[in-house]
Image 1 (cartoon, one colour):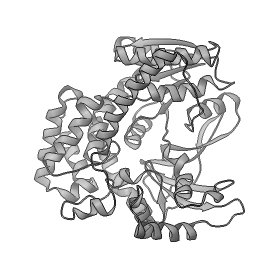
Image 2: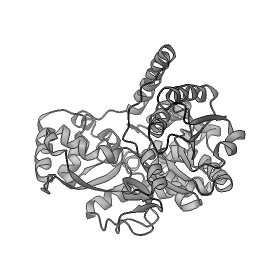
Image 3: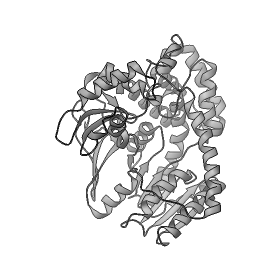
Image 4: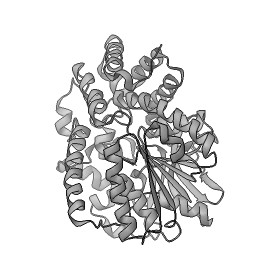
Amino acid sequence: MKITFMGAGSTVFAKNLLGDVMTNEVLRECEIALYDIDAQRLEDSNIVLTSINEHTNENRAVIKTYLGVENRKEALRGADFVINAIQVGGYDPCTIIDFEVPKKYGLRQTIADTLGIGGIMRALRTIPVLEDFARDIEEVCPDAWFLNYTNPMAMLTGYMLRYTGVKTVGLCHSVQACSQTILKDLGMEDKLEGRVDKIAGINHMAWLLEIRDKDGNDLYPEIRRRAAEKNANEKHHDMVRYEYIKRFGYYCTESSEHNAEYNPLFIKSKYPELIERYNIPLDEYIRRCIDQIKRWDEQKKLIEAEGKIPVKPTHEYASGIMEAMITNKPFTLGGNILNNGGVIENLPREACVEVPCVVNGNGITPCYMGKLPVALAAMNMTNINPQLITIEAARTRKRDMIYQAAMLEPHTAAELSIDDIVSMVDDLIEAHGDWLPKFN
């Protein structure tokens, strides 16, 4: 079996996903192709993964590196699975641009990688690269599964599923953590074992529709009571999602710092007190990037000093998918797939949705979810609309469609005038320079 990791310079992520592979009895005797366009980061990842292979996997895997676009086809050739973890433009300059240009217009963000104007720009610079990936995959490994971990998840996965012939699923880690997170945070740890939950919606805004304990008792009444009490009496990290529970009745998958910018309700220049009230960390992703760079430098020194790298199993889906497809033993996950079978009845068929899926030797089969509660579907639609338009903007290279996506993006539209939105988009395009294709 051959696994190609695109964006292997994401060293910590590569370590986690491929560490799972090399500690899995079914998968460990594989070929791993590491691909990146950054020589230093590719070498860092090769050192880490070679160490894991030597000390944990008895050198059962074969690890090869491929640097640069000219070697991309060979990295992909014959692959059974392609893991995508690229970040086009990186932290510097592109993430910085995504924050700093909108800030000049008074538009503040927290994460800017999924929606908001930052998420739109990230999609516009990433989809052209995925177009190139898709052409190579269709030529040199047409039967491979493309496991996408890169954000904005719904836009990138939706593009791959609608406009390429590549078998694709989008994978996030917010579904796995959702019900566990809220039960722990509300002091309901005794309900963790044997719980059953039902989650569906879109990436980073999939809804915890049902949650029951091992005896089948509905846990939502107590969750709603405790969440309301906690928000009323203390400052904490998850106040936006608890407000969702109060106003819409349900908890959702991704964090409060993410969800604060997916709607027009919380980050409002006219109501600056809401930032303090809901404990919203503006510019959070910038801080995380700086901290991650620092932590990696420290971790790299430790690896160089000690040589051996500890490997712990993660809750990522990739190795479970591979094992299920190879052994035909079913595996369940929360996957991002196209809604073209009407898996969620009251969302568009061209939308990318996040729903329970079953994986086996036949591939990935989504589970029918029926209709979401009307308000939840409406919240999802406010995100789906700019997602669909952004995909079309990237595909057609039409600048007007970028303006339209931004005008229909809920946080941007709530804060800025049409003229400011158009001007901001123009400034962002200019600032990105060659990281974006030319838009007409």
